[in-house]
Length: 133
Image (tube, rainbow, N blue to C red; front, side, top):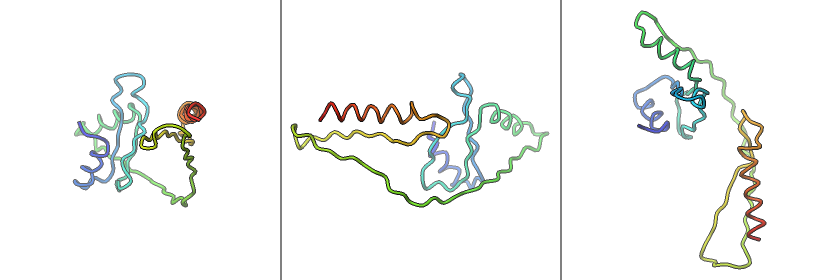
């Protein structure tokens, strides 16, 4: 079994026009579209489909009497660079040759309110900072 990044590399090697991923649908949490990072150097368009859409397309492709095809319309946008902030701190005690790195992100996934994805990590970092101070 290869990673999604490996799949994208193989698709590039074999000159695939686009990649359509879908989950296996074996449980309720595995039917929604996937969220996967293919790597910054990926040049092939990729879509992450729901199980039902992916299964329908796969079935159509397996049926030789059907001339199954997919047409993609992709809009891209270059975003400007923007600064991000990092907080670095040293404790007044402890071994200076030992380092603890703690991190989280403060942005949210588009599909969620952000309270679980980024909110919990940021809250944990703040609690650790207070504890270690």
